[in-house]
Image (cartoon, rainbow, N blue to C red; front, top):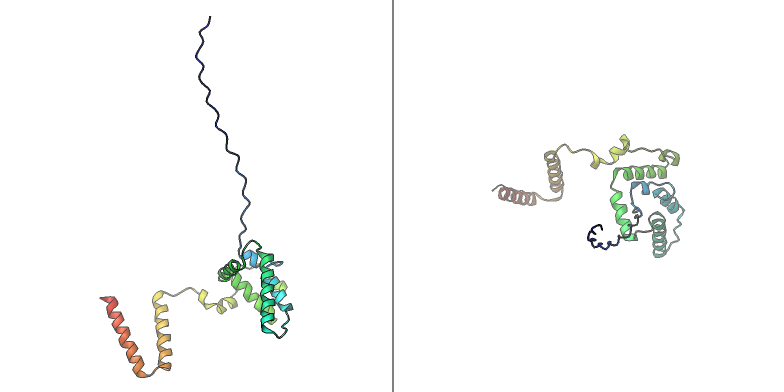
Length: 181
């Protein structure tokens, strides 16, 4: 007879965790959403140009807010309205949106057409850069600070008497001395 080897006890198999479901990609609200021709700012502009003022300010504002809420729901239905407005404010500070808004203003004034606005351009034109001087690169903190101080002092000279200017200068010297000590 052959010798029997002792059988090793079988370990119970651990249950396999169920496979993870693939997550749907999250909706991202970006500049592209606001510049979208069918749903973006262009659509809001076109809807607002159709808006008629009836004369009752309360009803007119209510209708205008409803128009904005409808636009919000078409553009980003998963966001609450207040959050949507905050995102619009944040995105509105970015260069592509400012350039797009500048172009919409030009369409409104008759300087451009909608066909011209649809050209994809990523940067400001020279004229648009001049409209937004805050976007220009700074020459340095020192020069910016000097410009600010000189503009404030010029404004104060016009508004205040000599006595108030002298008091302000004394206070500025005291503060300056305290900071350097």
